[in-house]
Image 1 (tube, rainbow, N blue to C red):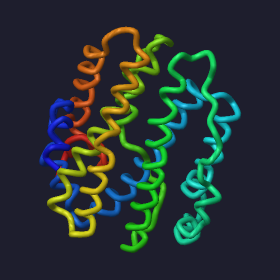
Image 2: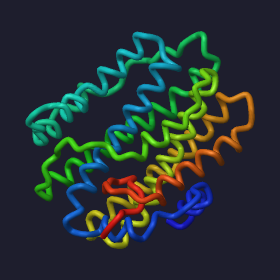
Image 3: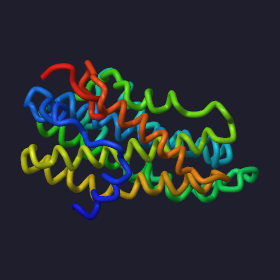
Length: 256
């Protein structure tokens, strides 16, 4: 695990504050932690779908992605959140089997498709895994307000059209890397089942931030090092700044 974490720690500009861990491992924080984690997995998939539809795929392929995501979005936006029915659905009917057609007018469209589709599949699967763990523990899914972290990162994305995709991919890299770092931070404090689960997520998701970085450099005609450094400073500030709301990616708690 240390081999997986070494490049992540080198990439991130700060560690998660111990004050956040102290809050996260409290028994009365578990519901909020898992619900928000569940939402984060789905949000990661939705973000990748948005990037593919906007930049990389033709309209019909974009509609195919929306249909793929529909059962997940219907679940989270439904009134009853019927976990049993959702997890028992025939997943084969929702598999992505259609060939996706890249946009002809974007040079790197085809390069984006494979890594982002793989990421979406994994995030959907992880969403279901967290949901199943919650159900097993009697934790009801509910809609909760997103924290300030992702919005804070996205607020620094450039307004220059030619560089927006680059910045969004860099932001994606930091969000994925921070998730992995927090999986590792939490695992030693959790019960055996959750600890093993978070270690397994760390192993499967450690590649995601590197995929995002590679794509960011691919679509940029210039070296992205300074932009990566800039977003690293923004991300560290959000993680270390006082935060009055506990979320999976929240900052340092105002109180314990």
